[in-house]
Length: 508
Image (cartoon, helix red, strand yellow):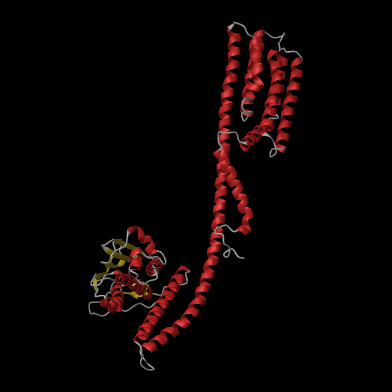
């Protein structure tokens, strides 16, 4: 069973649902993620943890180098060999955090974000014990002020480095440095100004860089959210492209099926219709003898009228289908719009006379020729006049105008004094097979294809069609041709004073 034969009305082809399902899944997951912004979300937590782990791995050489430089400077300043032991232990702890980070990244998709957040916080707390040992260590060979400011400076640098590296996890700085800073303040507390200044500097640094880390984390969350929104947009664009491609493919299949159907049905319908029309005309003219029953004569007239209506319907459907399929070719030639309008008036004059309708021409003088397809222009004007006469009451008037447009083009308008069309029904009337409530109530025979054909033919000429109407005030149909199709008269060739044209130069 083909896609066109399936009962479902979906556009996306079910046979190609693999990529479509992936796009839908990605789009749904991203939208849910954005909808739950501000609430705990596993995907966001994993992204933050991955950001934290990558930062630790990228700084695996920078932090140990800082610890080694600190140990070297402390040993040079007078600290004993314990500071070297501290450096070795601290480096091992940070290398262990790097190993944890690699392990997390290896199992990121299956990881539990709460568990790993707790593991990282505990790891920072354990690493903080090394800084605690450094904060309470003493220096016998150096002065108390030198040791105090040395430890305060190192703690300040370590807090700043941790804030720039480990901001993705909340409270990581507090887990690592709350105890060292507290013990540093307790052990070194003194009322001397230098001691109070050093303690205040370290405490303020801890609070300040905690605030900075909090702001950096919010920026990271916003960045992840924007990235997720971009992913959602890309997924939605891919979905729209998939739907568009599938819709185009199905439209092409439908158009091909319609063309084949119309080509087949036009032949199958026209053949018996020609026989029906021919035989009904022969019976009406009583070629083989008189009709003995008047009812039969009436029936034959109805058969002939119905056959003509059906033939006109087939012709209009074929015309509209040819235009929509791009098979209608314009045969452009120079013509005068007023001449074509006069010919169309002559064709509808008999029908207008049957309803005692006056067709009033209002043509502007001096209109130049128009480059257009005469058959198409004739069909445009005939359709407009036929519609006006159809809905104009007996004894009414139809006005046919031809003139200039404001942009330099030319127009044809047909205005009647019929019942009019409600404004909300104008789009329905302009649609294929569309008929307004007035036409339905008055049971006027028609197909609803006249005005759509007018629109399509004008669009092929680069023109436009407008329908203006109000209830009980009549309807005005306006067909406008662009200025590019108006043929301007060429200037006359110059002549000499003797009245003869100058000889043309021959070009070799």
